[in-house]
Length: 249
Ligand SMILES: Nc1ncnc2c1ncn2[C@@H]1O[C@H](COP(=O)(O)OP(=O)(O)OP(=O)(O)O)[C@@H](O)[C@H]1O
Ligand SMILES: [Mg+2]
Image 1 (spheres, rainbow, N blue to C red):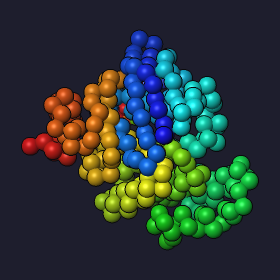
Image 2 (image 1 turned 90 degrees about the vertical axis):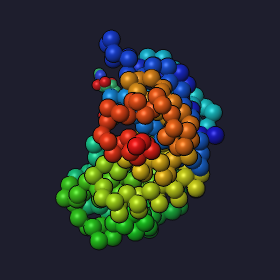
Image 3 (image 1 turned 90 degrees about the horizontal axis):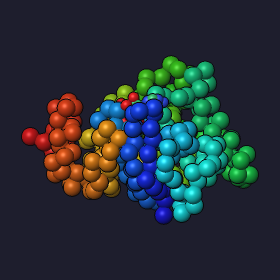
């Protein structure tokens, strides 16, 4: 089980941002959601997390329909996300950013686990020890993305949605990030990854869904997607690097 999106359509006035899209993100797997700019990826995340009511369609979590729940109740059921534009508490330190989330989780779930040790474990796991006392708004974007992931993990998610987490990261950060993602999935979390870095996508994803102008262009394993003519055509308008990463010549 995991997350299921069923026949979701989103219209903004006359513009159809998502056109009857279904997808699944299974527990224990990393599912990639890719597509050119404006394809509807972030809109899909907003529908899943409850920020954007769909024109049609539903979302289920472990078989239960959550379509009518507001965002905070979806979060309580184990949904966590990171944002395309970093959303950290700028005036708080790295450690405090993570601690806030860990404390909230503990309070909400009356967990016996203390927030302090959870925070320290995450600081170390995400390679943030050296910057733990630095204000979040002083960090380079790459490290900011690590803090956002740590904060999401402090909520012990069952479903983790990541919107372009590698943008702003250097190669070493992306490598570290993908190792953590794999571990998180191996712990049974359903990970849904929106990302333009095709090396990362192709190295970590178990299954891919490709959107283009709000329509589902393709779905399959990384090998299947790399070989798909429609996908290659959609990416030809993108940078050469993207088509190359897709396995293009
Ligand atoms: N609130 C909104 N009102 C009107 N149009 C919107 C709104 N949000 C998104 N759109 C439009 O819907 C389409 C899909 O946008 P979305 O942000 O989901 O794309 P995306 O795949 O995340 O793109 P990117 O890779 O650039 O982040 C775009 O044409 C966008 O302009
Ligand atoms: Mg987006």
